[in-house]
Length: 138
Ligand code: SF4
Image (cartoon, rainbow, N blue to C red):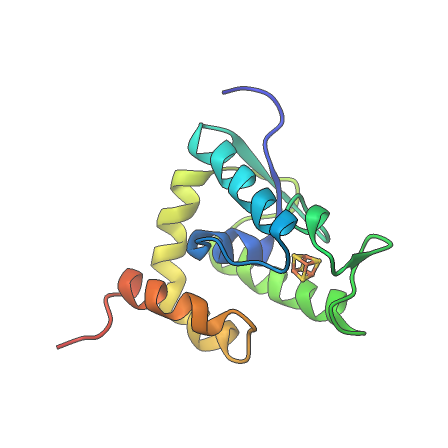
């Protein structure tokens, strides 16, 4: 598939891998399915700094900023920067979803240790992350 693919901020590159239907609203979840569908049909993504095509349908997006909490946009940009550093991607860089998925698997344990604590979606993601990371170890 050609044409402009989804624009994705750093931490969403990781978190989207574990989405399976939950979200802040039905519109938000529907949009997430749409974004993932575009990737699975071959769209190439582009890394953006700040609100992306996921945020676009989020009820927390206000005036082009994440307004989940008063300082959310700043805090999330720090998380985005960490994700991009780990995934070795930069702003405006294009990425292939399949390659990104493999990269996420490579950094997942480190990401989980640094970023997942206290996230609203931790309980939702945990079983899938456990599966991907090979937990529980026996
Ligand atoms: S909570 Fe904030 S960062 Fe997350 S999707 Fe909504 S606007 Fe974007």
